[in-house]
Length: 388
Image (cartoon, rainbow, N blue to C red; front, side, top):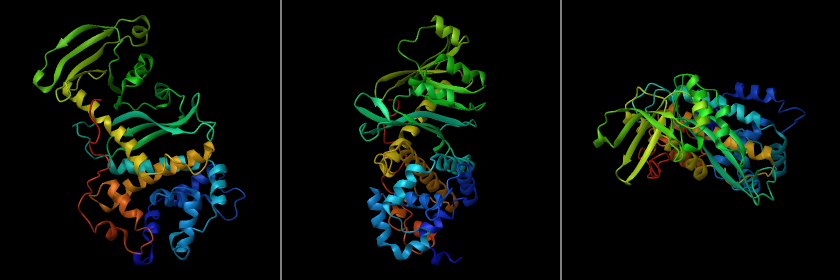
């Protein structure tokens, strides 16, 4: 088909594996007794809302009605807001979660050769969570505090391409460390986490799975030095030690030695101590790996700034999860588009161009290559302080 006869939105949606989407729908019987507004139509409407920054269901409905003569070419049917609201409420959110995982698997293949800033062949993951505040009276299922609701996005980010390989959405009460029980530990991989995930029984499970972890040492950690390695202090490394845990439960849960690396951040005059079970890497590489953990913080910042995940189109748990998972799918779709077209643009720039050109009938590669200069607001650039 001549791309000049297709809208940019249609060309973008053509990147999606429709067969895999239909498998996800059939798995949860998403189209059971549905006559008109299918799960695919729902996905297109919600993806359109993400790409064009729609504020509400009424906003979506109004925008689509104005462009009614172009909807057929975009693959979208004009939809009433009540129809979309009901679909978000009753269609199983797992349809879109599973489909997002399909896209994530494709993206990880495309980005597996990317650099992460540290010369390693291992897969490196950054694990963290981000809280999205909600009004408890409107979202009573999202319990967090006495007068405050929230959902948490627990994310395992593959640092090659900054792709969320695993996302678990919970209410705000679930402590971060519990998510370690949900991970399928990958042998040889390195998991980088902050000290909120320090639980020696769970860390030992990672060690026994032949994987590695890098985290911060808690201030109240009771340990003793077993051996010290020579270090070059001009690099910032202050000490590189083999340690053993002293506490009764800690030593029982993690009976083997650990490695403690202390680093001086000269710029901020701050000393940081890292804990790892990897004894072969240079000490400076351990510190650099923890520096890379900030990519997951920047990923959350990108999602919250550029996609609709802080204001929701529905109040039910299902509607919130549908919106979050389609937002994640949209983010990964932008990454897929970047690789397929070989673009030098950042995902932020691609999203900005798409948001104002979805109704145009021009080859998508041509639309995105009009300006090869990078926008100053890079999506995952170093906007946050390292080693905070």
